[in-house]
Image (cartoon, rainbow, N blue to C red; front, top):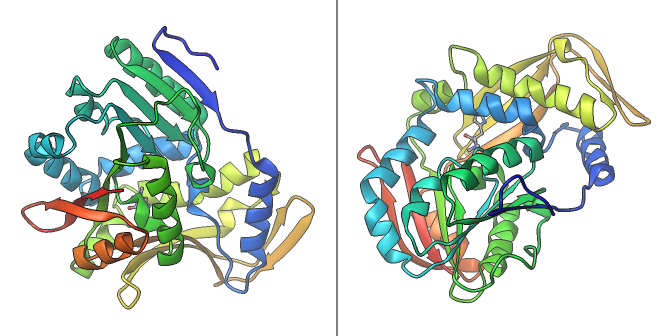
Length: 320
Ligand code: AVJ
């Protein structure tokens, strides 16, 4: 536990490199190979994601920001008396900052897999908010069952914006929501962003931006695995593909082999033929009713939700 500033504490959840390599091998051994989307987020991947959010085509971040802009006071009124803001998968921590203007929020605990990126962002945040205690938690929120003891237990507000929940299959999304409910504790709240179903053209453009940042983001997963998990993927053998699967209500991203290729994961080898692909991400689009139904099955009570003028995105407030 250490930090650059008096009001910053840095915690490291124990690293699961061995399990992560097994997770890569499990996906590559499948008849339809897949990689877990959490592997997008090394430092380069986090920066590429930030670049995606600035593109004209990628509407979710901007639309959600518009919802926060318009409804922040109402949101803060609904979560009055929360002292601790917990943010799984905080990225650059930019979205949380607007909530921190509520003086009752005295603690901020972001959880982020990209440790250097997180500590850099938290140093800035801690300096800008001297009265705030920042507990930067470096680790994988999908493996985080309890928070470090330093984070107060009562008055928690879990913040999960950005439609990250859409990356999880419905069953895993339910498990994650159940875990969030226990992290939130009694009388805790969850404020969570979900992307809404919409016109195919809008959706597909958002995952195929013309500047090619999404393509680079998708391919970067291979460089990250090569660097960190003793893998060898030949990135030049793959290309980006993203499309809307309307039946399943999700965007799918794949890396398609442009020629036959051989992949090494630790000691294991896998052959892929030209035209085969690795499924790297799903991004589910939930209608409000079906999202509320899913959250209710793990015991969350819906309080309310907010949306934008085009009904493209929703922010749900749930009570644990
Ligand atoms: C960060 C998971 C919300 O699914 O839209 C952006 C990730 N992938 N472009 C999404 C992403 C391709 C993004 N989430």
